[in-house]
Structure formats: C-alpha cells, structure tokens
Length: 263
Image 1 (tube, rainbow, N blue to C red):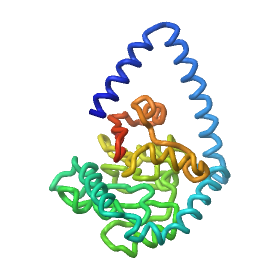
Image 2: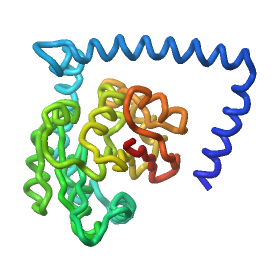
Image 3: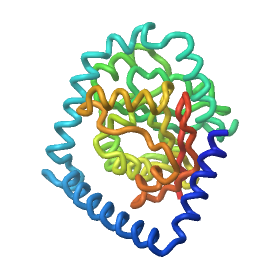
C-alpha cells in the first residue's frame, strides 16, 4: 500500500508539472538547489588535501563521536533492543539480503553500524552467507560491536573518507540503518555509497522506529540529528542528483525502508 501511495503521489506531481508556469518554477528551484549544493560540496571538500574534511564536517563528526561514545554502554545493553526491536532487525536483515545467492557471499557495508545489532544478522539472512564491514564514527561503539563477536569487520571511519580510500571488492549493498539523519552531508554519503557499490547494487536507508521518530530526534537536538529521512521519491531524487543512483522506492512506515539502485 505504501508503494502505491508513493507512486500515485509522484504521478500527480508529474502531471501538475506539465503546466509551463510550474515547469519554470521547478527549473528555478532546481537551479537554486544545485547552486547551494555545489557551494556546500566545495566547503565539505576543502581542507588539508583532496577529500579532507571541512572544519564543519570535522566538528560535526566530533560531536557524533562524543555523543555515541558516551551512549555505547546503553546501546550494547539488552534495554536498547527489546524483543520487538530484535524481530524488526531480523526482518530488515532478511529484506536487505533478499537478492543474495547461495553461490556467493553477500557483501554489505553497514554505515553507522553502532554495536553491530544489524551487522551480525546478515550472515544468517543471506543465502550464501555474508561478508560484512561496519563503519562508525564512535570508537566506543566499534569496541562494543567487536566485543559481541560474529564475523563482521568493524572500522572507525566516516563513510565519505572510507569510500575515498577504498580499493577492495565492490559491495552488493550499502546500508544506512538508524543513522541517516545523523549524517553531516547526506548527498555526499550517498555519493560515497555509489563509489563502493557494484552495478545493480543497492543503497538502503532503514530505521526500525520510522521517519517520524527521526523527526522527533531532529527537533530535540539538531546538532546530533541535523536532518530527517527522505519521505518521497522526489526527496530521494534530490539527494542523488549528482550520484549514479536511481531511487527505487520508499516505504514511509514503521519500520522505514527506502532503496536506491546503483546505475
């Protein structure tokens, strides 16, 4: 039903935009948005060298690290994952791994992997097992994830920096679970995902508690959660205007699930 609602909304918008005045308005908006994006991207990419974080991104990432280092003990506890959340995570892992094949390990880059609550599930959810790397800004969250065991490899990194220096095998899926609203530059993060995805691979955004919950977190502290989740296909398209990713669908429900396909 959610997919039908999104499709109908997109079709209605497309029909309305056929009017000349609406087309001119949309063109101006897109031009202004592109200019703003280019200026922001320039700020993000300036620093000590190519790909170095801007002072703004560095400050943002430091804030994320401090917040989640201090919260790592809680997120590693059973209190953070009650049975209903555990069941949701199981279902999300199965859905993410649906394209997997018995003859090959399913390669996943888990962004904002935290204590590994989703990272550890891919091996059982994928038809041929999984080769998983988790990246997180918080050393304490990574430490907790490693302590919980399992087969994933965990790295303390920003996904933008990780992708810039990556030279390994391409991934089948890059997953942003319960972290996309925390990211400094969501478009840059999706562009980074595209760099490490195999053709036909998927960039997936999920949240077990839904987009409205992320909006509440944003209202509570925008320094930690500076943005929400894309609620429509148009929102998704605006995030990847400069990246080789195509929005596939969005389910604005609980849990939240949206997906881009690598061109």
